[in-house]
Structures are given as C-alpha cells and as structure tokens.
Length: 440
Image: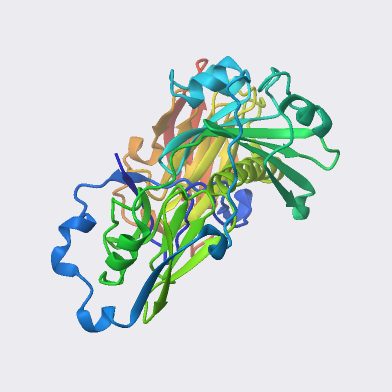
C-alpha cells in the first residue's frame, strides 16, 4: 500500500526520516524538533501514466524537447557491485526484524535495537550503543575499524563526515545494506541495516513525459513513486528508492542505485534532471543515525527528568501542525513515546508519572492537561471542576503557570493580580485527585 505524508509546509523532503531541526527551551517557550515523523494516510485514488492518454504532451511543445537515452558513465553515476554476504551470520533478532519475521517488541528496544521505516518501503533497524551482542559475524559496537574490515572485508561505500568527526563504512550486499558509524577513535559507535529492494520503479522517459503535462501541484504518480509530501491536497515532493522528485523547484534527482534506463532531457523542459552519484539507501541509513544522535543529544541538553528519575520529557516541533512531546523511559524498558499536540508552554512533572502541559490540539478541547505516563492517560482538571465554560476563564495564562505542593496557580494574562488556584492531591497509586479551586 502506497502512502502520502501530510505536510502543510512549502518545502518537502525526499527521504521521509530526515529534516531540519529547530531549537528552543522546553522550560520556558518549548518548541524544538527532536525528529520528523509525520501523520500518514493511504491514497484513495491514483491516476497512473497509462490512464492519462488525454494528457499527452502537446505537439508544439514536444518539438522543443529532446529525450535521449544515455549511459551511466555519461550521467556520472558509478556502478556499485553488491557484495555476497550469504555466508555471513546476522544476529537472530536483527534478522527477524529486518525480514519482518515477527513484531517489534519493547524487549528489542531494551536490548538496543530501534525499529524504523525506510521511506514507507522497507524496514530499517538501528543498532545502538546499548546492543551488547554480535551484530554480524563477530562485529560488535565498540570494535575498531580494523576488526570490522577483518570480519567483513573492505566496504564498497565509504563516507567521511568531518563536521562531527565520524566515518561511514557501508556494505551494499545482494540482500541488504549495513552501515557502521565510526567515531573519531575509529571505533564502531552505531550501526544500521535495511533491505536492498529493487530500485527500478518506473520508466524515466514516461515519467518525464507525464511531468511535462502535469499542473503545479499534481497527484502523485504511483507508477513512479511510492512516497510523497503534500500541501493543500497537492504533492510537492515524491520519492522512491533510487530517485526523488521536487515539484516546487522542478527537478528530478536520480541516484546511482537506480537500476532503470536513464536519459538526458533538453529543450523547453519543465523539469531539470540531476544525477547524484550517491546511494539513496546510504543516505537513508546515515540520516536515521544522524537523527538518533540528535535526539540523544537533545534529551541530554533540554530534557526535564521526573522527580524519581523514571522519565525524561522534551518537546519537538516540525511545523505548526506537527509538534508535541517526546517521553523517554530512562531504564529503556520502552521505546520513546511520541505524543502529538503539545510543544508549547511549560511542562512540569507533578510526580514521577504525572506531567502538566499546555494542550493545543491533542484531539481534546482542553486548556491544559495532566498526562499520566504510566497509564498513557490524559486528565483534564479544568473540565473536572466545571471551569471550562466559566466567563473569563480564557483570561488566565495556562501556558506559564506556577506550581506549589498540591497546587497549580494560573495568573491573569493582563491582570497579574488575579489568580486561579487548582488544588489537587496524589493518592497511593500515583493518581491525581482534583479537589477544588480558588478564584481571586
């Protein structure tokens, strides 16, 4: 099933898991990105190329376009011959997740395995610093580059990332890609693996002819792409393994792992073709490792830990309709919990499991909520006290309250002398009991 990512921005990404990140301060004016996952919806209807017979290139326009088949060498694309790793032994849990032989469970996360989706096409597994076993053969986190090469041979793709003093050793094999991030001491810090799927997915000549007739915000052509970003009902970027398309800036990017015929397009063309001598899979593995490192660093820098140390919370902000909070269980017994709809104002732990936060669109018409992390449940003190319909209730500042033991204190936005005090207690089970309010 193909999917579209719903975005309400004027720019898109060609790989679903990587985006720019904003900065912010959770305790004051929270609003920082820690990752870029968007809500997805399935395509109800898609028009294929062959169904668009009435949308052929006008004769006068086609005369000005030259479409010529070219070689990979002419396009500047290397051919990376896959390695044969059929005799190599993968860790059994990594293999099971990679080939979708079973469901991802909390125990996998506890053991340092983080499951991701790669461009809605295949599964990806990040092997973090917490994984203690052998990843493949006798290769482990912390091993040196020399040990890695002695076990697996020389990688057929190497990348240098000078801005964070790391190297990438990537092995493109017949069945999968496996990449290793090496730190400045030439030791394996992280690894990631994903399946190597066929990177053909549609005829480039037909795609270009289709684009020559398409409107500015077209529907996504399923014959050529399986993943897209959308604004106001129109696709602005689309991608599949091996190539990507940007409708706004009007260019097609073809990567060196694309396996179909390639062409040059000259004349009065609507779209530019850019041949990128890099591997789309490798970019995907790198971007997920980058996002993992970024999230770890952000939790360390901005996260607020609950009183007993059980949880840490921080905000993320992708854009104005995609934001919220991330909650990490600090013993790593569960994956990071992503909750959409928050991301603004103050977040404060009332106890080791109760989190106060300003609510914008959690799906509830509430001014603020208290989230019970243990039970994954929201409580709404204002609603419980019948205050949401009280005249003047929106004159209070719910975004930046003050706290005292057993009290949430809200001051007037304009009249700082006015206040609303909500009294509560926490019972032996850790549940919040809303008791009364004081208005002055």
